[in-house]
Image (tube, rainbow, N blue to C red; front, side, top):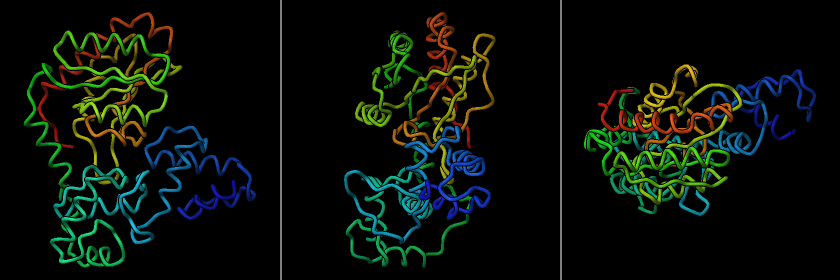
Length: 313
C-alpha cells in the first residue's frame, strides 16, 4: 500500500488526507483518476492492470537502457521513444509503450541515419541525439497513423476474404460462436478465440494475422458500450471506426448504446496489432435471449466497417 501511494504521489496526486499505508477515500479517488487518465477500467481497485500501469508511468526516457528482451520492456519511456521516432518519420508502430521488434527496427534506422552505433539499444547517447533533433510541429501525424490510414485505403471495400478474430474470456462462448458463423457466411475468414487471459488472446489474434478483432465481454447493466485503442499521441483509426459501427448496429431498445466509442488502453487493445474493439453487452440473460440478433448486428457492423471510408481522427 505504501508503494501504491508513493507512486501516485510521484505522479502528482495529493494523498495528504490519507494516513500512510491506508487505502482511504483520497487514495481510492486518486486510483480512479489515474485509471481514467490511463484508459483503464475505472473501479478504484489497484489490481494487476492498474499496478502495472503505475509502474510503467514511473519511467522517463533515459531512466534505463531500452533493448529487446523477453518479456518485452514496457513503460512510458518506451512510449516517449515511439512518439519521438514516429514524429521523425521512423515507423516504430503504434504508441503502445511496448519495446518490440518494430520499435527496434525504427530505432536502428534512426541510429543508422544519425551516424550512431546501430545496436537497437536506446541508451544515453541515442537519447541525447534524439533530443538534439529539431522535432516537427506537434500536429504532424506519426508515421504509424499514416501507415494505418494507407492500409485502410488499400484494403478491399468488402468483408469477403477479410481475416477477423472473435474473442471472449468467459460466459460468451455461444455468442462468439454465433458471430463467427455469421461472419463466415458473410465471406470472412474467422478465428474464434476462447481464453481467460487477454494477452494470450491478443497473441493468438496476432498470429492469425487478423485485420480486425472483436473482444466480447459481459456486463451486469442493460447496455452496449465499445472501446478501441488510443494513447496520448496515437489512436487506432480502424479500431475507432469499427467501434462506432458496432454502436450504430447493436445499440437500440434492447441494448442501449452508452455514450460514444471510448479510446482506452486495455491489454487486449494495447497488445493486438490490428483494428481491435472491446464490446461489452449485458445483462447475461438478455444476451442469451438475443444471441442470434446480436450476431447479425455485429456482422452488419463488420460489413459497415469494411465498406466505410477512412475518417480522420
